[in-house]
Image (tube, rainbow, N blue to C red; front, top):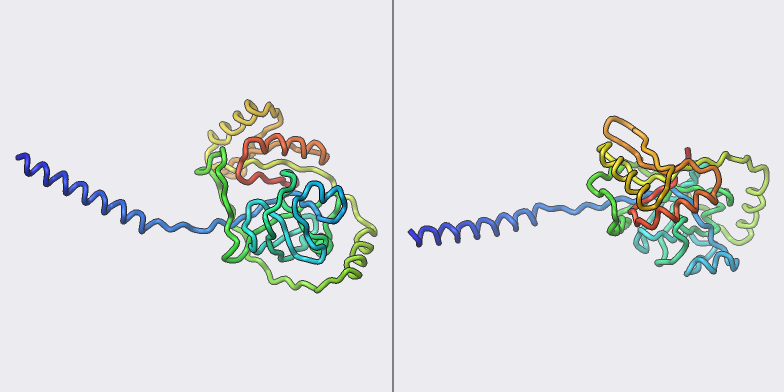
Length: 255
């Protein structure tokens, strides 16, 4: 009788180990494409910029600093106020203020005609080498909804020298139409309303932020956001406050 029990236990151990190995073989880790909407910091050699950005960018390059992406990743940078885009490369790891979703070269800024007072952009990773480097975050990972992105169109890039950069600066400074400033801070989208309510409660409790809201996007999509904000000063203060919770991918969305 004892011998039968021992044989049965050995059988269970062997089959359990096999199951674990089978599961490991079946697991496929896919790449997560990164995208983020927010304000870009345009790099120049002024003291105001070099004091807050730890590494330099050549003004004629197509280099972008972005904290969530690996060096060498290919990205599409889109000016969300006019729809103009350009392809760039992620540079070395750099330290810069948390409020900005990226630091871009002067050339990129001029090519897509960024408004220096409202440099609102989307950074979107493209190519096989552009996977998102996710960090540990205090949020509901299982609730994240990843939106499908449209394919990237081919974009031609003209070679620029210093004189052409100066001409672009002069051209952009003429007849700029003011755009109404109206933004929210998107914390996350949730599948369950109860999860969205729990997140709203947490933000209100831990950060004492009163204007946290929930918007129902569809039957199974609930967005937690803060705002709206009518000026960049208040937007920066709120963004820097909520950044203390180290959420994975906070976005700034224009209403």
